[in-house]
Image (cartoon, rainbow, N blue to C red):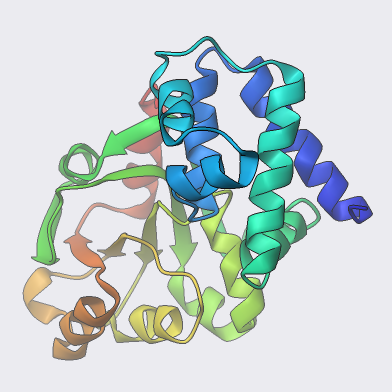
Length: 236
């Protein structure tokens, strides 16, 4: 039997998939958020390997509520068998209040957005890694307050509903502290944007840490207000 938190999370996920205009994409978002491959999910459900891919691509008619319920149950069961880290993370997020002194803005997109598109919008300079991937959201974080006030577990709140997002750390002095904080937490973002620092002033350790965790790092001189204004104007 699911705990109360897990039950509410299950209802949220099932509702989002069922009510979405693009249920296949919503299904894929949650499957990838739990870091579960289509083959593993299909095997747990007793489906042929192509079924999940067909649902996600829209080649197969949208699953009904009964099938969606089984899919969500399987996501939970697979994650629990692997230690339950993502299940615990997303369950806690339902009851976590985001401190406005730590998180200035957080948004999850309805569909994945190419990182290069987001980076160009806020005048980013690529420091290391590449922009050849997509993100499903962003979080604008006060780097000093996040590091000073959040425990490693609380730090996970900045990921919203998916780790596949751009973390924008504001008012950084060298970029080293945010990367060290990410290094000691279990979840890693694909992209980090350092705000308020010129690319040639970024600490050399940033690139080394980013390469270890396969994180692309950018810098931008746009102000925090400009960044939030530009991002909120998009229809993502």
